[in-house]
Image 1 (cartoon, rainbow, N blue to C red):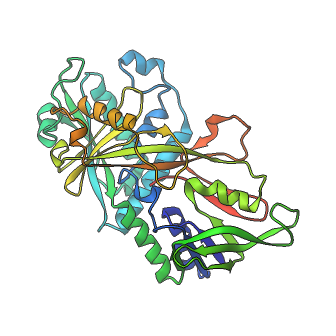
Image 2 (image 1 turned 30 degrees about the vertical axis):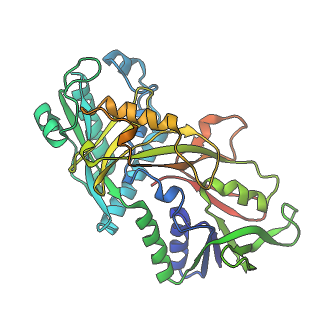
Image 3 (image 1 turned 90 degrees about the horizontal axis):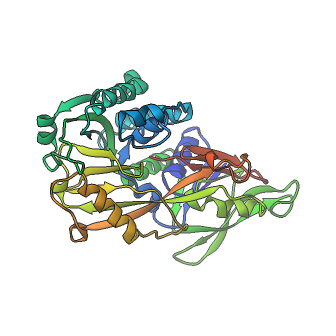
Length: 388
């Protein structure tokens, strides 16, 4: 009934949903399952503090109370993203508590007006999550409590302002690769068939060539990357869940299809365990308005992430510039200076940002970090975008 192309989190989710509805499902993946973006995240299940701020602020971060007033706006689409993500957070923590657990996240506060403002932020975050938030409520810590919970945190910032305390919000932390595999195993348990190292080399059509009037996608031609053997898989419906590579498959169905994927690199560093608290993570706005995290992770610390344009690649690599940016931002918040010698490992993942296929050309405001479902000529369905 359904052929799913792509064995990441999205493809596994499509396969699981279809198989549990009683459909016959096949899934193919050109590499290891969840080996691309799905295993290169920040390991969080969160609503997005940045999205919440962007709903009310034109420019981030505000440096004065006057900046907060000047930059006030209201963008409800960002609140919808936060609400949807917090609903998923509750579901994932509730359904897989053995690998998705609550994690307190500290936002350091150095200015007097930040204390009441971020108390409102934390309260709003909890209200959006609702009664099913699945994590403890937000709260504000004093300076003494904040330094106890996160000993490596600076007591004074680069502007000479003393730490006043911190907001603590709770989000979820997960093993992203393991979660993806668990979803796929659930699909297989429901009857789906999944094969990795099987690459799609073309789509089959009934009623004409690709893009011709009346032509219908009827399956895919695939190649076993281990043996080199090629064969066809016929299906009533083909679903393209290839993440940043989705445009390649869309053009197999319709050579005239306009590209919709806009890749964005997210770099992460693995640092020594003492950089973070074993009990909590740290989150703050960078000088250019991005959000950076320091998180305890499997005996080390994960620092990230960035948001930079880059080329689509099966093996994305972190750039030296992004590594230095993360280290520089960490040194604004932690008391012991970090250098490249402290970096134990690094990885880059490519965010599958999506341009609305119905938007006018050049309309960059339509870039979405939520998922988009698109159907091109021949009936190929693409689901792309979204995030953990």
